[in-house]
Length: 67
Image (cartoon, rainbow, N blue to C red; front, side, top):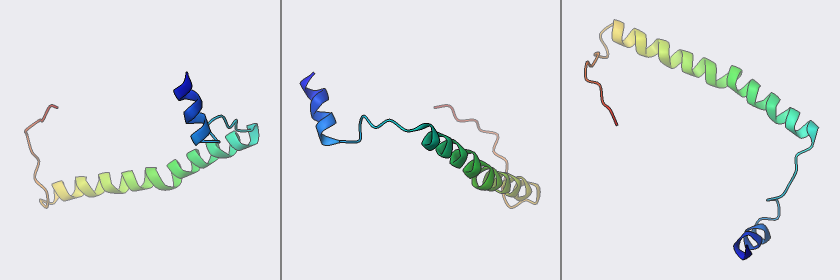
């Protein structure tokens, strides 16, 4: 229990509660960043890899690696 209070003392924002407006803004930022950055970049990289394989710049590997 003492360790928990020490962690709170080290980080004064540990118990911060976001307001409803702040949560709305964070959700809006998450959505916009996905559609404006992640989705276009992922699509461009996927299409680029497909075209590189199709045109012979990359070779398809039949080996499947399991972790």
